[in-house]
Image (tube, rainbow, N blue to C red; front, top):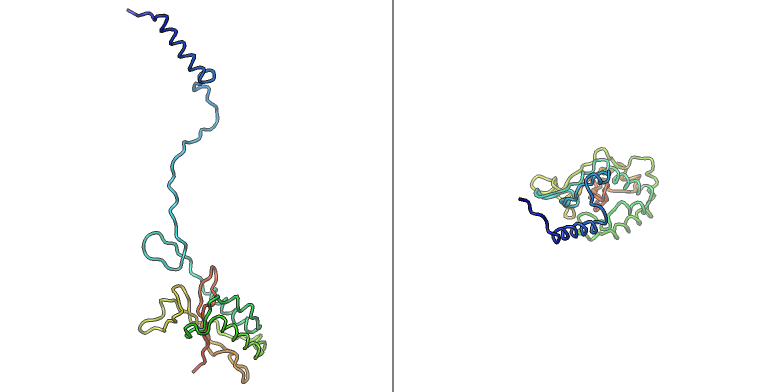
Length: 212
């Protein structure tokens, strides 16, 4: 047997429906009334990218590391060749751009620092006419000897300069035009300590040696 709704109950239901319509601002939205725009996916929480350390020449064999691509032989030839070109043209400004701010004379434990070296270069170009070397092959760049940090020091190896750091390159160059007549323009051999600066090397140390 069905029970008829009392007038009070019907009135309450009607009032509730009216309230729902009023809250929706009009007719109820049905599935057929949704806009035809592409749906956007719900937002999701993303894992932040892993922190990658700055790239270097060496890194411990643990965790996330980033290594720079080593500079090739051309980078060594460029800075060494530019050094001798600067001397031949007596261009001290170009010379200063090739060296680090703390360049030293190797083997002097910092006694001959950047200031002393620059003063020595200026004195040499003032005393000698390096333009006499123009047009000649001053240094033998094809037979340079190149050593990494791990190649030096220890039993049976060439000594490692105290100024050398991991990642540096030590380069020995034979000078072909060390003397012109009775004038000495350069040592018979020049040793360069090269330190990486971005995509190139700069000279962090230098030493001239005479042949025995």
